[in-house]
Length: 481
Image (tube, rainbow, N blue to C red):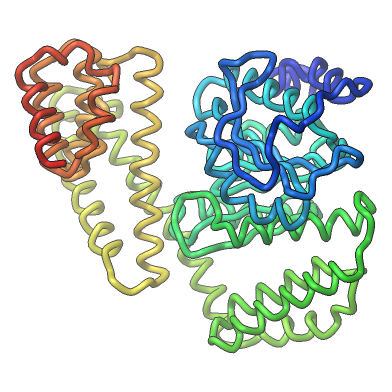
């Protein structure tokens, strides 16, 4: 990475290093209770910035402790702290989740990250060799960026629901350990599967785990497994003291879990599990039996079918996603050479897109959890997330006309989506179109929007708050509570 990229990713890296590794002037941490999640700790250098915190009950300032810095795309620091608190308690980690770092412009997040980092370092005795980062979605990309910007100073990254940024892809050597997670219905599922293969090719120490769910932080159990994986890696690289009882316990725990999956008929998951354990504990325990088990299962009919289906679904998902976004582009009229061609293209694209979305919705509503249902949900969620990000970026730039135009197209395609209609109402209100704003808001309420507190506190509606239609909707929502 060149120096200009480093400044872009972490413009204050030099200052951060100076503060982090300066001679100890730490404040004692007795003012923060241990063994308890604290929702908000104000940074001493800037009280407008804060973080959620968990300090293990065994904390002792006479020794150094590993720390996990966490980044949520919605600045909800409490969420990752809650997810990792059990692992933090069991394995002695301090966990700090920023309440200010979020998706959006980089500069405010960089300021928040540095403030949290420095505050934690001042309060606690940190093991500078064992600093970790975690994040979900955009927060995962922040964690990976941090790993490259502070090359060699971030020991490992736990990335949930996303991996590396497109402008900072993985490159050899990857300077940190990587543990990735994704739900089977996560729209970034294919990205994470591809990243797993890329890191394999780069020879990077990594693991990617899939869970039942969508685009979200990994479940607490999987967060614990991520920390356990980091513990094993730390012992392999001598970053922490080797503990034979801990290695035995974690080895048995993993093997028992995978054997239970095999006994339950989850042959593909068992194959992946045995392979992962053999790689993880190589050099720590005799893994020959697990390697043989994985090799045998790889030839099983169920595993071969699962691998074939996975490959086919990835190809289908890429093709269908490209098709959906091509139609979406045609709806905005950027490909037509004349007004008549624009109208014809738009009408055809709208009809095709509506049919495709209706088909995906039908498949996504299947009662049984199947690969096809997961594929349909991933495509729908990817399409909606992209539309949301587009309109949000336009509103952030105060381009309310284009935001309203983009959202009105989404409302045609997804007429029953209350969130799309609510965002459309925001765009219309911000551009001063009061009538359309109230009409879109009314439709959002009809389709299920019910959070009156959000509505009353949303500054997007300042221009329509005195309108009779807006007041009527607020009263109707309050009456339903």
